[in-house]
Length: 310
Image (cartoon, rainbow, N blue to C red; front, side, top):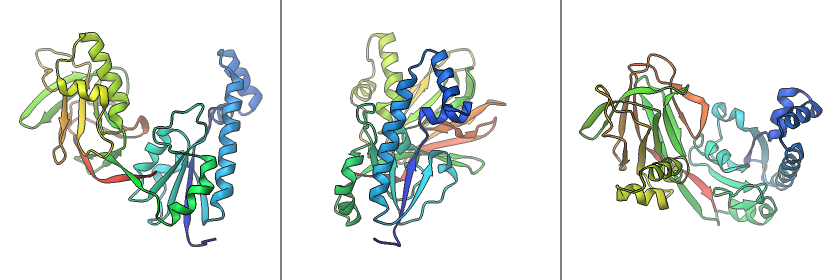
């Protein structure tokens, strides 16, 4: 056993654990779930399989270093040791949310329930760990780079994204802002701006472009058609922005609604929202930044990439 090696195991609460935390007991959680017509048996089975996977993973990891288990909720405030190995057991979203808090540390991602989760970012299963971990610790496994986006606010705050950045309002009302890209600039009113990485281009962005395609019935922009169909490479430092439901009026334009942000360039957005403006990444609004009137956000590719073990 290498006593000096630090291994961080990142996990998250299951739906069952969330319900029990909210309603205090399993029986109270069962009553609430069944009252809403949900299959509580599926909650129990999901939790059983997840806990079994964690037990399997822990049994292997404890023989290879000092193991610390970390719940997803503590990610924003946790300082990962520079030379640690990070093991994630959960869904794709947990991997994405972990990567943006790392600085070069490799991630070993494990799918705890392949029958339930597709696991695009989860190349391994719990039963694989005993075989692949020695190869990983000896540096014999390849790593896939995952490009990220970076938001820099004019007040000095920053935010990273593995999948996408959302800029808009906290509530379901129109966001107002000034957008600038290249030599073009305009005021807009919309449901928000989505800026996607290569990884994120197959997620939220694809759903938005698919909806636009279905409404229009055509793909007028060949680049939009290519991104909607195939996405962009995960290691690409090009980003793609798309405006959700832009509204044309005398004071708001709809010219800058979609485009690629090449590596080395940026998109600039200045808030015109006196309150409730927000910027968050990867669907996690709780980690978001307030985006009040007058603040400017500069969005471009992050200089570093996440590293996913294969």
